[in-house]
Length: 269
Image (tube, one colour):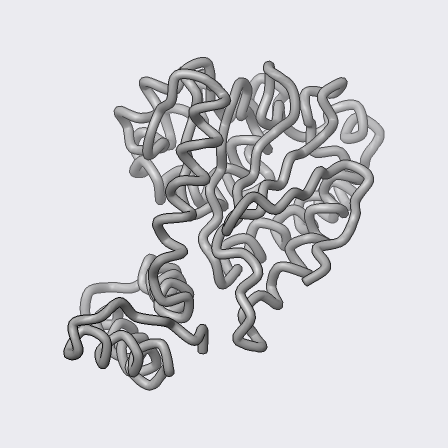
């Protein structure tokens, strides 16, 4: 599978993981329009994984270049020349990126080193889960500019940490370190440095790669659908997901292998 080449992104296959690095360290990897367009193009390509029963990668890791920043936020210099209509189009384009990340058939891990502020925090929260280095920091500081979150922070932050904590972080514009982000449930794991951070993310992708690819994809779809439902509707959605998974060749192989007491060889369909 050709993942494409991009002006602002580095894309590198590492085992079963695809490492995507936002490569704009001179701007602390801010989400300039060019970065957003590259992310939009890449997520379009990645949406095709598994459609032909081919799984060239089993997970995606998103990180930022340099020692200081994952993504420092939106590009304020660009935003300063926008009117409200242009700002809305900018936000909607990034919404398309984040929705595509959530819909990818493989898990996505945000590997956060340094700043993940504003749009950077919002990009990270669109990933399935977040890993962070000890020097990472998170926040939605838009109120300091007279703004509000525009790339999904108002929605996803309360899903991650609860509405009360989301209100506190958004209203104050407060920046928190990785240890506090771990405590409130925004981050899954904290690693000592960027090397161990990336290694930890890759190890998790390799662990997932041993599972049935269609099962992981179906589980991701089900969790995303159920997130906004009440218990009864959520259980119905889970039944539909279970039936869909049960009919896959991966499920047939997985159950047969269990009965035969052998390792499964999942066909990926």
